[in-house]
Length: 168
Image (cartoon, rainbow, N blue to C red; front, side, top):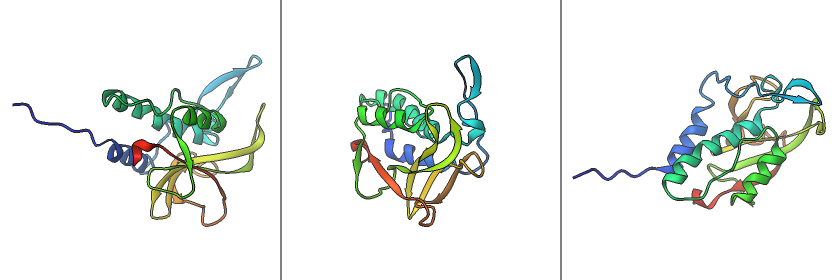
């Protein structure tokens, strides 16, 4: 008789977001594009990678969801937060009022690198871990995923908290 194997979806998702901040992770530092024929790094060496980090983790969950015959969490990986949030909303994510373990947080915009079309004010995005902790790309420090206080010790306002029913 074959053993019964059950995939622990939420536990695997939470482990992935916790583990990505445990050491040097240079995966999300570059994504090259051309704009009007000029080549540029859309992630600016990692300083603009938070949307790519979030959408990539969600996209990686799709293979497990397909195995479980559940809808995808996101359709594509993205390099900007408006595109990530639109795709999340279209894929069943919705806004909630309070943080929960596994939720995705969008923080207020701050001045940063000038980006054609988007300007120099940038939203920020990451994952809530519980116990007042979050993981997001260290846009102004390490340029890699890092763990930190979920409001940056009260210095950054949360604009939106995203949740998916598969996390219930």
